[in-house]
Length: 123
Image (cartoon, rainbow, N blue to C red):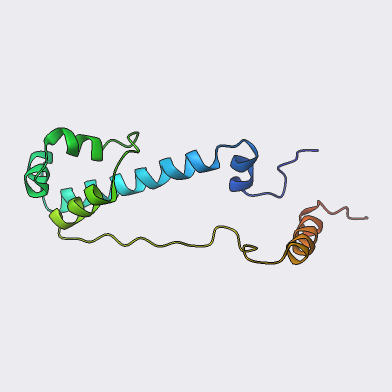
């Protein structure tokens, strides 16, 4: 039986110990996409953005590189200001069971596993 049947994609990534890496990469790609979209709307080049951020074109190239995960909050904030925007960061609970007592969490997890089991129907 496939151990991933009934689970979600995050469970799959977590089982392979790559959830955090994938989440970080996805966040960086989303931020990069938003910056590029704003640049396009403002008809702003990389050089223009660098001037407005008071930084080098190389720094802007790193900012727009989806694989470069070394962006600081300061750099992101300066880019947002240069694009007439602001940064809004939110923490959302990744695990709805976070904060429950161990016994409560185990009980809910058991019920969820029961619900995820493939059901056998009699004909």
